[in-house]
Amino acid sequence: MSDKRKTKGKMPVLAVCYDFDKTLSPDDMQAQGYIQAVYDGDIPSFWRECNELAEANEMDSNLAYMYKMVEEARGRILLTKNSLREYGSKVKLFPGVEEWFGRIKAYGDEHGVEVEHYIISSGLKEMIEGTSVAQAGAFEKIYASSFMFDDKDVPVWPAQVINYTNKTQFLFRISKGVLDINDPGVNDYFAPEDMRVPFRNMVYIGDSDTDIPCMKLVNSYGGHSIGVYNSETKDMTKVFKMLSENRIRYFAPADYTEGGKLDTLVKAMIDRTAANEVLEELYYECKQAAANGNREK
Image 1 (spheres, one colour):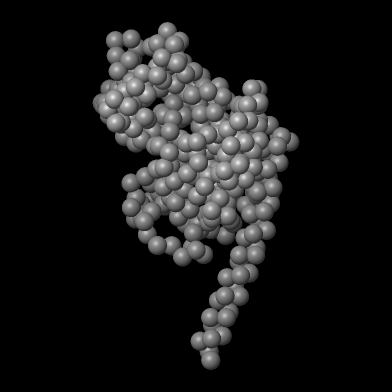
Image 2: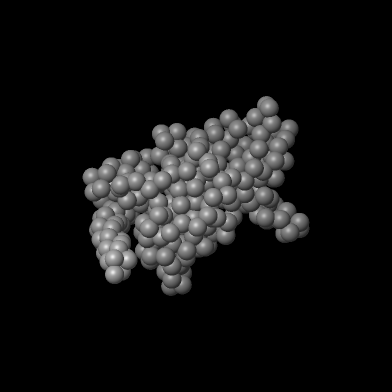
């Protein structure tokens, strides 16, 4: 058994899971320093060439951008784990993100709910680790695409690639407390009452089609999905589409400041979690009493 497994405690756990690019940050993380360094700021060309590479080789699009990052850095810049974290440290965050994670966790504590924050992203783990919020310890776990590095900390091969559908495996890991990415215990059977984080106690916050499988899964098991849109551009096209297709239940501007719509939504979900868990506990007590009564007959 992995030493990274989490077990169910006395307090109910609410897992808030986030995409990163355009959910916590207004742009792709690679376009906030790295692409400018190797492509003279020509961001569209970089992504166009990544897509062409993927199509020409029947390649996962995330593997394509990871390959291009390494290839284009050669002879131009020194690309290492440390430099990727440095790029991450410069990534812009939406309003209120810096204070959000601690404030929401504190609100949960006040209401008898343990709130945990998770990243599930197709972006780069090394860059996310360099952000101010990750450095402050905001996240219980960061699930994101990542590199394998040689003894000089230079990326030589993909270690993990996170795409549309394999994002969902991490929701099952979180639900069962099997957080180690190499722990096969994620496939073990858990009785519903033994799930550390039942899906009804999950919130998924994302911005686009890449988040749909996770949103749909969370929705179907009674959890909460929130679509966010850029609070400056106010372009709600994607969230309107996701709502009309029943991918999300709520939408809000990506403004994480206290008293905003997103703040109000998540706090209401914490309140509901506290009430739900009281009812669930009473349900299982009644179920156990009935089972014991039948045995006595």
